[in-house]
Structure formats: structure tokens, C-alpha cells
Length: 486
Image (cartoon, rainbow, N blue to C red; front, top):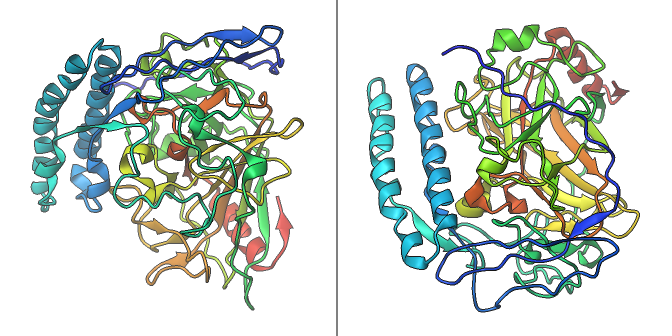
């Protein structure tokens, strides 16, 4: 396959607070979701919200085969990744037909054809693995998909708790409201989400951030790399970690800072030779995450493109006000330098249908960052800005730079003790903090796979370490010696 660069480039103007979305989606019963969005200038009175409280939005929920593949032989990886990407495309196409269907019978009718598509694709995954190893025995059970209502209870394994919140902890008024409850704000979301109930007033959330205490011998330093805010407008809907060699493998648009050569077809060698937006040219790492869009009724340049309007991601892409990339140490001891080309994904792009076991992004507002949300977008008070935070895994297995499901080669330290699991060693922890100046209220959303309904719990971040090895050793030394470096 020839090398192709998929990029949408432009500079985003500073948003004037001139228009916000003002009405909600019209939900059809029986499982279908059809949207009617009405937008108003700030000078106009918003129309009343249109929602029948007895009707619910529904989406397609399919088992995530990739999560069930902790081990895949190296010589089967390319074939398996390609087939996993095909499964994602099949769901996207089925969801498009489902969302456009005019009645419940037509919507239910997408499931059987989807199952028929999935079966040979999953069989191809099994065959590829069996050539060099043994595929998991439960793959046949992952063929069938179901319908899932937006206001259903959490999937199995989903605690329903916000990040940092202990089970059973009481919520402040306004936190965890059901979709459609009046929060005193206009909605104006995209046709496939999010809902008004996906937003919460940050002032109603109790402080919930807890960190392990530093112990004797902790690596207390920090290293900050400055890589800009993507003002040059490097976007594409690829995911070189999860779907290498597949155009539009993400089905949503990514923001990139750092390495400027990153797309679905980038090899490690090409990344090592690539240009970087980082001030320190020794850092050619790739940092990327789903774009945040203001859903104000204005079409973006990608309204007819893959990853944009074709995948039901609409609205103006927002350039962050700030992007802070900091590497932190371990509260219990020294850290080891990361291996070059280590890949880490934090969060789960399919957490709405998978459950929140791997969800990890946090949402908050400036001035309120001791209050973090995992499954809600924040409504920030006037003068406060929206903050997304990604705390990446900080424990490495000491051998692999990636794994078949892109998770098992790294791990999180214990949230109470700060210790890595047995067999893992502490490495510098990447903390990404992204700040946006958007109008107050629920008029924004992150890009997502279309069937994930733009839920905040699906937010995620991706990182490929392409630090010069000497510079990465310096990062570890800085952290271990308790210094602040950049």
C-alpha cells in the first residue's frame, strides 16, 4: 500500500461568543435516533427544548474483539489489526443506516446484516492467530450485536461512579442528572449526542481528587515538554497505534502536537526522522487526542469528509488555549527511562458500550481542578475554562513497546499506594492537560466513533515515545533527582 497523508490543515480563529446551540435532539421511540438541531444567535431567545421524556435514544452495541486479544503472534499482528479496523467500519456503516432509518423495524433490521459481516471477519482474526498460536475460544460469542438505550443502566462491570468518587458517595444536586432533566441550559448537541444529561455544573461537584503521598525515595521531579497547541491545524482520522495502515481507522478526527509526520502509515523510522512542533527538538514524540468541537450550527471544513461529517462528527474544531505535557515521577521510588517507540493509549474510545473499566480521561474547569469528572462534561462558570486531563499509565512490563490489545504491556500504579503491579517497573508518567475557551453551557463535544454518541466517558489520549534516548535518560534523571526541568 502506498503512503498516503490524510490531513486537514487550517488555523482556527479565536471563538467569538456569538452563537450557541439552543435546542435539543428529537428522539423517536423504539430505538431510533433522529436529530433536529436549531441554532440561535446570542441575541435570539432559545426555542423550548424538544424531548419526550418517555422516549430514548438508542445505539448499536457490539462486543469489542480487540479487548479480548491480549496476545497475538507478531507475524499475525498486521492481519489482525486490519480485521479489527474492518469490524469498526462495519459498525460505523451499520450505525449510519440505523440512524437514518425511519421506524423501529428498519432499525432492528440492521443487526442481522451486521452479524453476517462480523462473522467472517472474526473468523479471519481466528485464522490469522491460529497460524502461529491459539486464538481465544470465546470469539464466536462476540459476533452478535444488540441495541442499547442511552438511558439504560451501566453495562456489566461499569460502576457508574465518577472518577475519584468512592462507591456509595452521595452526589451534589445536579450531578448525575438523567438525560432530559432541566439544567437551565440550552442543549444544541449533534444528532447522535451528547444529551443534556451528559453535562453537569462543576460547582455542584464535590472535590474528589486523591493522590498517593510521596514516600521516602520518591522521584519528585517533573519534566515539561512544550509542543504548542496545534495552531497549524494538523488533523486526521487515522490511528497509527490501533489501526496501522488503515485510512480513517479512528472514524473521528484527532488533534496532533509533536511529530508532524504522524498518520496511519507512519513507521518508527519515519517518526524518528520527522519534524516536530516541540520546542526541544530532541522530543519527536507523537501526542494525539480526539478534537473538541463547538456545536454551534456552523459547518466545519470536514463536514463531508471521513472522520468529520461522514462519521457524524460535526461542528467547529476548537484549538486549545493551552496544552501542557508534563512527565512526573513515582511516589514510591525511582523511575526508569521509557524505551523508544513505547506506545500508550489511555482511556477507551468505546467506553459507552464497553463499560468504563478502561475509561480514564478527566474533565474539569480552571479554578475547580480538585473536582474531576469521568462520565460527564463540565458546565463551567463565566470566566472559567474547560479542562481535559489524561494521566497516562506509569508502569511498564520491561520488555514490550506495545501489545496486541495495546494495554497489557503497561499498567497503572495502585491509586492508593502508588506502587506498580508485580513484574512492572515505574517509568515517567505523561500527564496531558488541555484547556479550551468555549462558551459556558453544553454546546461542545469530543469526536467519537458515531455509535458512541459523543459521550465524555469515551475520551482518550494516545502517545508514542520518540524522545532522543539521551534526552529520555535526562528526563528520568530529572525526576529521580527531584528537579523541575524542561
